[in-house]
Image 1 (cartoon, rainbow, N blue to C red):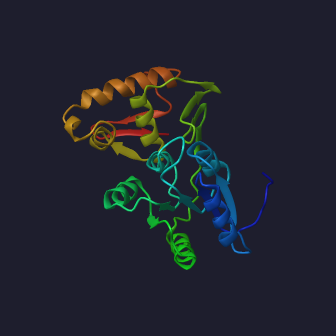
Image 2 (cartoon, helix red, strand yellow):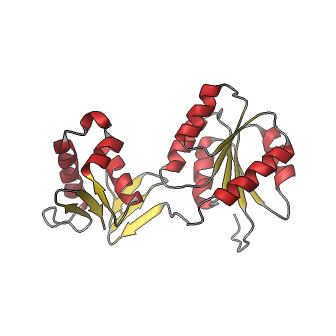
Length: 230
């Protein structure tokens, strides 16, 4: 992909139907927008990090993963507006997509004028800050898009729970996150009275990420409150 300095809004289409992609290419590609296409969820996630779209148009029925999974993965690191374009017209499908983090939902077939209006509305509502999927602090590097954690360039194996804690700390880097908030987000409300579960995992993370776990440089404890990532 060639590098461009244009300020035109970028639209990413993630849809496995070639006919739909051609149709959207025809109606969207113009002097007003730049368009990038992806034929499945895997390529869509890659494009979301490299193309850095301003709006994503997403089909739910992808060949390699469900569109809900794509939404969940993108929402781990980005607030880019996501408009679902799907033949699924049941209320529970729409609720599931919106609850996962989609901003809007259009049922196929749809009108061109309505689609363009939804895109313009999403652009107006979009958060203007740019979220970088790669977090770097000293020797620590965390790629939220690929879910990789490295120390001095060497990949570190984390458990799914340890990664979720790190992801939460990264998305609030520099801010104190309370123990109760981490417990609720990672384990659920049933674990709110079990802070020892969090302490054990923080200890394990420090052994993996810190040169001197007893003198952490990345994950700091705020006594009686919670934890903070440098």
